[in-house]
Length: 185
Image 1 (cartoon, helix red, strand yellow):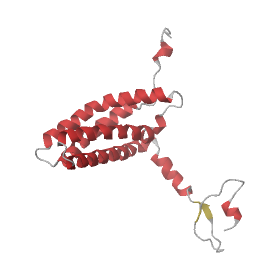
Image 2 (cartoon, rainbow, N blue to C red):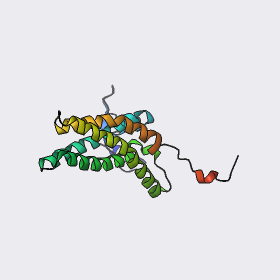
Image 3 (cartoon, rainbow, N blue to C red):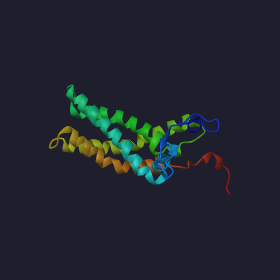
Image 4 (cartoon, rainbow, N blue to C red):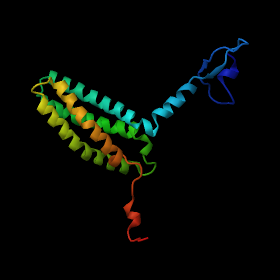
């Protein structure tokens, strides 16, 4: 490979990949990431938000199930173990949601207060769906193994979590009521 292919216009070297051979037999080179850029942009688009939600929720759900399995294996009562696993996985889910699922709705200014407000709103919003999750778990654990009962609870709360997160917790445009105080028109 010539130095032209490893450094261009004073920019750092890139990894280049072969893109087939034209009739003259010379290999054409392109940046290795060129084909993935469109896929990444597509994954980060507004339309792909439900997919990102499913991925982050799936990871948080797997974390909850893994913690439940670990705690019950160490002799914890399954209800207490599920509560602890749910609380811990909920915090992981908030972080993933803020950083990945609704990443385009993060503010550029005032981040620490906004993160705290969103975290608090998230805790309130998932309290209802967590209660529903636990009710399904308690109701089904008599007839299902604990992991299956917990997965059923996860499935029941997922759609509510998406709607609440999308419309309230991570909404795109926050209204600043303090600017409108005393102004009537």
